[in-house]
Length: 494
Length: 121
Image 1 (cartoon, each protein chain N blue to C red):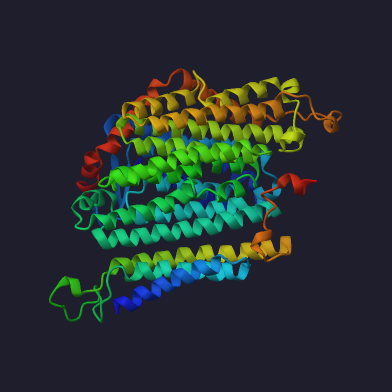
Image 2 (image 1 turned 135 degrees about the horizontal axis):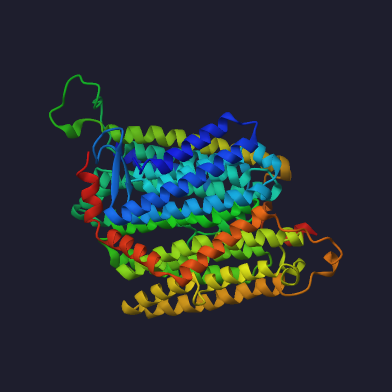
């Protein structure tokens, strides 16, 4: 069945790669073909779910709420599609970006397992299984982050592993508490039982445990400190994938839990989310402005952009959640692209530091153009994809009367533009620094420029023809806010 | 009995956080391990503490189902133990690598990632 394929392709490809441990070349072919296959399956899954409604399936033959449930609604299917796009471009980029040593130590295998965990988390219909998928994803990401064992990577990995272990502990505690209060772990049946719980304050307590745990994973204010300390350390193909996808899995879980389960006390929980989103945007962008290293600057931007997604959830109208979903998709593409571009400029300049960079516009004008597309889109300049995301969120905020957060989001947009011009004016615009003028300018490898062009083309496409993605996001948002279809599909099927 | 278990879990959580806030690697490892135990123990007793009444092994059936031990938290606990031991082992090996790469066991000295430009000079 279609819903299993996104998982099975990756699992089998990873196992097949393990059989060819000594042959990284074969592993690469397998991994690339698996991600291409995944892209095809994911598009098919999204098409089916979009046209015919939610699909669900029970692993192991036990009917819900006792069995292991997999559910694909429009939101999950869309996330799987976007994760496969990101994975494909990163694995092409990795061809020349990842060195031989890392490839021979199982880069492709870990890559596939991480993707396996990510897709599992998107499909999980049961909170304990969601925990297990999270762990699959996290353990793989621990290894990817520290693979190669440079000093900076090891140090970044310590911070990343410790904080994520604590986050998982809180997740587990939340699961235990929620099971005690409701007696079930299946999300669909939780969604019903939770309405009739006798002590709603305990449910709010559970909500806080989950918010804390997913908040650490999604890097929201004030739980984001591990991110700028670790994300910039591995090679760019790995950073690009992690920056694009991992925090968004946390955001996905927050959106799923706070639309399906914790909707009884929105006065408290969603106001809290609104405050968090505003502070996340502001601290992220202020942190970015202060940085001197392209990779750290972009890392802080991840945090700032997470704020917009949480803002959409916190406003909690159909349009706002559609805006948040649209924003996640746009942001994954743009963010990954910015990291990949900075990987290329860093290679040309031999450094990621702003003051040691320069001359890209003179010698590689097409690279400058590709950067401008992504950077302007991140800042929300029309007609690029970020504009529609911000426009939808702002419109939803104004309709709901949340002037404050709309104002904050627009100011943060301006500051984003400011920090992007900082990269532009240091890396792209000025002449090469004196020390590097005489050095030979390395040609940019085709395998590194192709992913960047692909992602920029997707950004342009979403920007010029936003209606298709907006329609899909709108349908996903309707499904999230009216969980009756989700519940009936999961519980009535054997 | 419940009070004692609650107290034990509380003390485990508190001491693990206390240990993690220290600078040394060894206390971080101890803190992480105790934190893992605390969450697992919490998960284990969440189904309620019962005496001598396993749910699936048959024998004498009690008068009401609420007197039976809840098997689900036990299953969850097993999964959680496996996962947390895996992560703890990874962390121990990672810290050993960090120690041999940096020559320090002070967490406060792990600041290469914070000022890259200073270290690159």
